[in-house]
Amino acid sequence: MDARALHEDAIIIDGLEINRWSRDVFEDMRRGGLTAVNCTCAAWEGFRDTMDNIAQWKRWFRDYDDILLQVFTTEDIQRAKREQKTGIYLGWQNTYPIEDRIEYLGVFKALGVGVMQLTYNTQNLVGSGCWESRDSGLSDFGRDVIDEMNALGILVDLSHVGPQTSQDAIEHSKRPVAYTHCAPAAFKPHPRNKTDEQLKFIADRGGFVGYATYPPFMPQGPDSTVEHCVEALEYLVNLVGEDTVGIGTDFTQGQDKAFFDYLSSDKGTGRELIPPRPGGVTIMPEGLRTIGEFPNLTGTMLERGWTETRIRKVMGENWMRVLRDTWGA
Image (cartoon, rainbow, N blue to C red; front, top):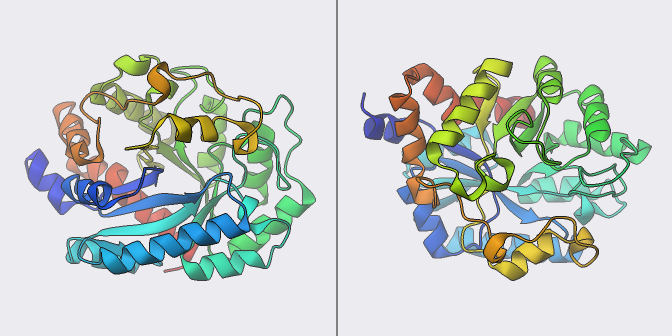
């Protein structure tokens, strides 16, 4: 099977995107052949702002139902594939929206939030982020949050979480946990990248690794290409196995400098956490500049000798298993 046919036939899942959402972006998801995407609807937002964001998503699901389908289960992902739509499951990059009310988790689960990252870069009530100077570990409140997420079927995301808090969460959770969008620190030391020891620790305990095709995390930086992305994926597959790796691009398509400044500041308004980017925004790798170029990943994998079975797993089937094990359906 050639690259185009394989990409069109396979389940293609992106484990995290945080774009400037619009009809144009959703149409680019269709051009890229994406079956399902974890779309961020909260980073620094609290309860009210997150509810506003979800309300907007509900309008998009209604207005663009010719190309979008809200996802609650993996069967919904299969349905999106059959109907040639992109399935959207909502996700958070912080647990700020529940404030200090664990019972809010069930409310957001019912609205379609299927993935929640425990912390975003810095300290919150649950634990520490990866940019904190000292990692306090998972709090007792955080343990209660994970227990409720496990019970409800919400995937625990640890991508921006500090190393000790991550280890505590991996050990405490009764369901699979994930780094939905990260890169190997062996390629580039970076607070957001994970060491071989961290990657093996999560994999050995049934967890999952989504690879972020995000140039700031790559040694080539702005000169990164889709070939470099597949090289990193090969490293991860060799390290933790082809059943444990997927894609989580961290696409920020259409976002402007104000957005990056917001994300890069503590709590969205405080101290600068991340050095300014050239031009104020992140440019994705050559050959994967836009979501519509997603088929180039499949093509590059084939060119580098990947088997069809491995490609199907990494491009989406592995995510399907993890989401089914977490969501229960």
